[in-house]
Length: 313
Ligand code: NAD
Image (cartoon, rainbow, N blue to C red; front, side):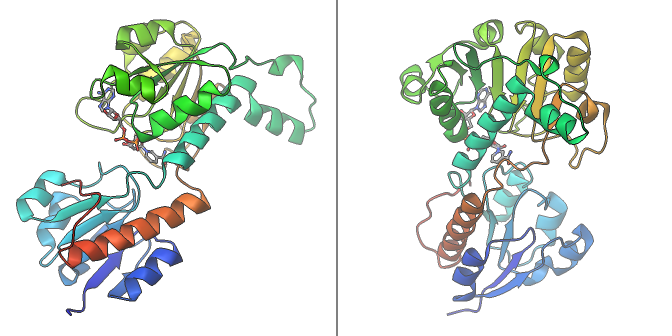
């Protein structure tokens, strides 16, 4: 059996690494710079990344024996799929490993937004005792609009129903019956904007979804809407969101993802009605172990020419 060489660039839980090390030579170079990666990539048969590493055309063209790239997680927008296709490099991900973690995080953001939990905690720790100023709103009997009813959107729908929310969803790639089975009433995007008190975004970043929630879309929403984005930076137009927060059109926003990560101390991040977390949607112990063991098994299957469960292309 050939000695496969596998490179890990964004970390991988021990359970996944142990699986790989039983069958291959593994280099764990968490945090490697793009220049170092470019220089060493010709040595490897497989590359395992998360969201930090950019597997762009330059990197893929420098690879000499790369058979497979594995994304331990969901989004593959940091991989140049067209170049991978042209070079015959298999691209894999672990589409379900982090869905529960992100769905739970989305509910956490929604509750933090509706009850100003971060502000309440910070004020108490600074010696204040605010009550009237921190009056919130209930999720009960509010309408939640979900854009993108895939693994995470469906998970959010089921959890929101337990809070007594009325859940509507827009997803042009899933039929109406399937959307209902996943826990939401299918609507058009216009209806979703007009009816929702909370809107949660769960689409991948693509040419169609980039800037999807811009000035026009936000203007069509119910005044005082609360937005949650646990998907990808770039889906919401950050400038449009900031001006809508200033005008009050958007009452609050909770963001786990940003156009630039880390975003720094931007006006948007510092806005008092914004709750911002550092892309931690998938960051649970359970999800990380699941993603690591799933991608390890799948990478070994790809190297050995076996049947694949989650081939992106
Ligand atoms: P998924 O593929 O199961 O679901 C995405 C859904 O979006 C699909 O049902 C698809 O039909 C729909 N969609 C595509 N284009 C659309 C459009 N223009 N309008 C409406 N719907 C559209 O993916 P998922 O597992 O639910 O993950 C969703 C996204 O969440 C990922 O692409 C990723 O970017 C993001 N994510 C973020 C984190 C985090 O840490 N915050 C972790 C995992 C995933």
